[in-house]
Image (cartoon, rainbow, N blue to C red):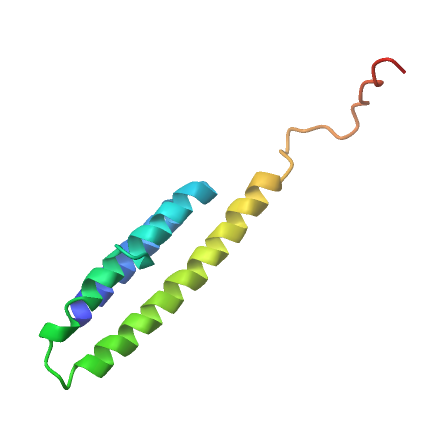
Length: 102
């Protein structure tokens, strides 16, 4: 089971890093921690696990979910900052146009 969590973490990190827009990031979030996401699929296997392993599986799942939500939020902030950034080629010294009908 630990292998599944490790594999999901690695693939999730990669998907989050590759997201270029807020919409793409939202899709990644849904695919990882959403109702029909990969983490939910793993949790559906808990009843099949040995009863002594279930608490650890739950703990690992909660930690991974919190981790994904944190790095998704960080990535979202980075995407928003990039979207609001002024291009280096933008010349702030160029005068603007006068309003029409002035």
